[in-house]
Length: 388
Image (tube, rainbow, N blue to C red; front, side, top):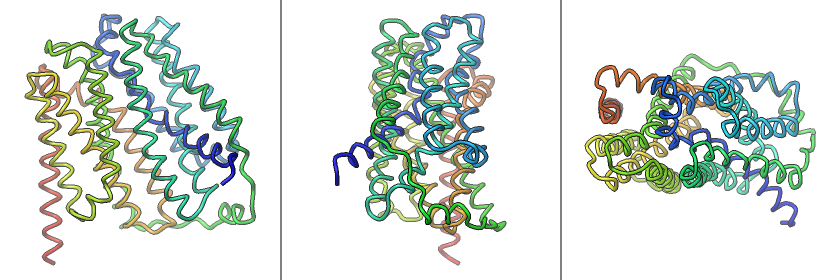
């Protein structure tokens, strides 16, 4: 492969480094709660998850956007919005303006998300395409872990300095413009675009919505961890907010490992992979809830990170096996919308838990019970169908 092609691949994969970076600054929450004492905990936590809402809207409207804007325009615009809006809290002091900047950052991520996944399928084929798609998924987790770790170190200077990490969007923009050429329009590409729309059956919609709801719950629990770990560590006197950022970074790397070994675990557990992953997640959340030491919190959060990645990998893998190829684009989009809705709803779910019990550990215990319940229900269903 030519050097130019290698750099093109690097430029494309670099886009995925920031797709899940909205929560990379979540370790700032304890400091932000002090900076905005007139706002409730759930309002401040919403600053972390609100990008998922605007991102969800952009993903849902991507078919319309693609009719008016080409790839280069979408990605360039997305990266510029991401970088400018992401670093907004460096100069913005008002809670309202910071809230708006986070919404716009989600818009930028939404514009990127619609193309970062499909670019590999459009430009490459065969074994190379499969390898690059696997690497692309790993880049998301690696990017989130790295940016979370860097944000934690910047947090030790001043809380809003952590938002400097979003300046990486400008670096990725330069790489994209320099190394990634505009896509060639081939006859095959035109044929694909003119392909007749596939009509999804009612049974296929059931599969799609089941996975969208499950994906939303799993992402909601994962985002809840990101929102609460730093506060949990500091308020229980187990460590500092920087320690919380380090724990979240370690947990993300655990999720990265979960993605790497998912294929091997599927060969072992097969259809029982989902209940096993959910049961592991229940153990992780319960470990956090009853933790009395920083290391125990780190272990529990890492178990959760591993389980969340295993569950989400199972969901998208199941979509590819339960749906025909022509329905996959729609299925993936609906599930992604469900996942982003789960991310956005995390502060509200945590607020409900807090209304029941004000102890921060109750939220973790609540998710442990939910994971355990769904695990048992899925296992019973699997055993029922095995007997038929």
